[in-house]
Length: 303
Image 1 (cartoon, rainbow, N blue to C red):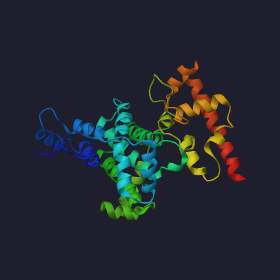
Image 2: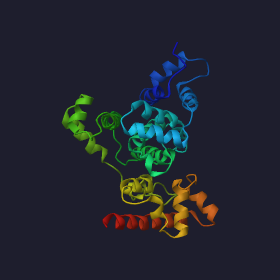
Image 3: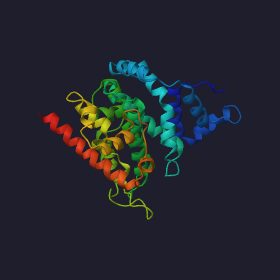
């Protein structure tokens, strides 16, 4: 009988099993209590982990930056439910929910590695962007005009996971040769996987006949993420001092969009509804605000 008490981080490994081997998952499901599956067991266990308050978040984040793995795991465990929430918004777009959760978990791990608790915003706001980016990139891979064979796609995912683990272990970017050794693959083959990974349909092609959105819209641009933008320049100027230099409407939209200054992260549609303008107008103001904010930061950084 498989133990029904599984830690959240063990559940991440179960998620990977579900995504890779449905036959194995079905076998394990048969050993669980009637009506219980690995999928809902994962959801149950992830939901049991207490959320961190702002003070606890900063405490564990500072320890994690110093290499404390227990602190890092504590942050991951307390935010697994965010991955589930973000992943559930992307169902019926080409990947099963558990596959989306696996991709989102990789984004969550990446966020923990890069989060700076001294910048003044909550980890959930920061992590949501990384989780969404990981999921949307996986979905974009599903929409390739040139579809990769399943075994090649799995190898690419294995490579990406090893890169993340290598970064966690050594705090440096791995070379292709080092990953080749970890995967027990010839260097030439790993390099070929990397080149195949770059095969994409045109980013300007519409996703379907009903929308003008293109694949580029699915790939968040790091330059357009204020959280990352501020992280780069945090040693030079105050976040809110720079933000205060924008027109009031631009300030409000960025605060609402990225969960700053007490706001919850809000969609373009919700902001438009609250402000009495269209979704497209909100997007235009957001882009103008980000462009202006970059100029302010770059100007201060250059002086």
